[in-house]
Image 1 (cartoon, rainbow, N blue to C red):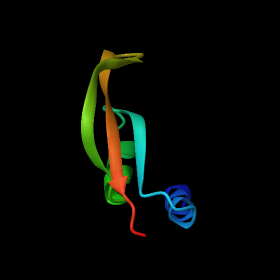
Image 2: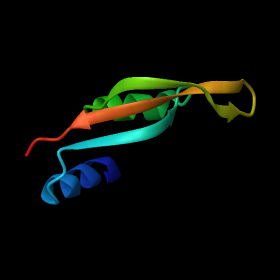
Image 3: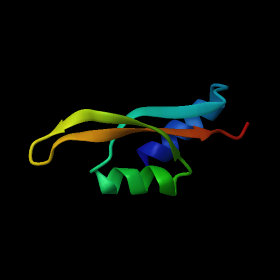
Length: 68
């Protein structure tokens, strides 16, 4: 619900796109959620996040153009 609300507010305020600069690659639930809401991975930051078990893992930059 928060994702849908933030997108609706962004459109209402005139934003043309949304971007999340750090989605941890191993957080499969979050990656799947953002993709479900129309976001795509536009970049990866190698080793940007220190995971407790896996050590340094990549983080994704996710982006979505917004309908006006």
